[in-house]
Every structure is written in structure tokens, then in C-alpha cells.
Length: 129
Picture 1: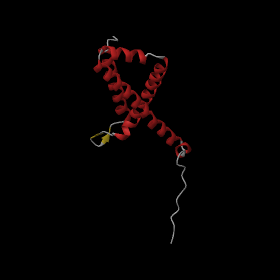
Picture 2: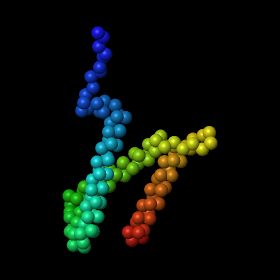
Picture 3: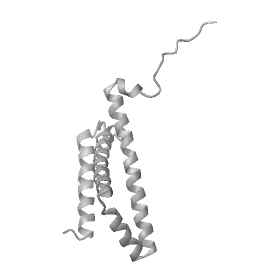
Picture 4: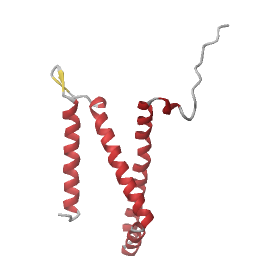
């Protein structure tokens, strides 16, 4: 009986042996921060539902030094996460127009423009300007 060769692969550090794998794993880990932000957002919605006192208490808690550091780190990582996904978008969602494909820069650029426009609308609705 002939046994197939099975190449040994480290179960915990395989992604450190290739730069592309390492970058991919970093991109995947950023989703944890997206989850943290989603939980904070749900926590805020729950506080609003419980009333003004609960919401004010949440705001005071979120203004603590530890939470401010966590929120800033989360914001930076979420920006990185969004940029990483916008860079992948042309490969994941190629758009064909006739026989040719729309250039990847146009697809990614359109995503950035929409992101900026939505951000401006949210800032306007929040009363920033």
C-alpha cells in the first residue's frame, strides 16, 4: 500500500511564513474590531430605549480614558478594514461593460466616493456642519 505524502503544516503559525498570508490574517482580525463597534452600537441603542438616564450613563462611561483609547483604536482599525476591502472589491466584483471590464481603480474609487458622501451626510445629520 502506497501512502500519500502529507506535508507538515504548523497549526498556529502557518500564516507567518508568507507575507501575503500574514496580511490576509491581519485583514481578517480587523473584523473583530468591527464586531466590537457593533456591540457598542447595540449597547447604545439599548440605552436609548431605556431612557435618557441610561443613555447619559452610557455616554459618561464611553468618555472614560480606557473606553476612549478603545474607541480610537477601533476607529483606526475599522478604517483599515474598509480600505482593505475596497482594495479587494475590483477582484471580488468585476464589472463587465461590453467586451471589456471596468478598470479596478474606477470600481474602488466609486466605493471611496460613496463612503465619503455617506460620511458627509451622517456628519450633516449629526449637526457637525
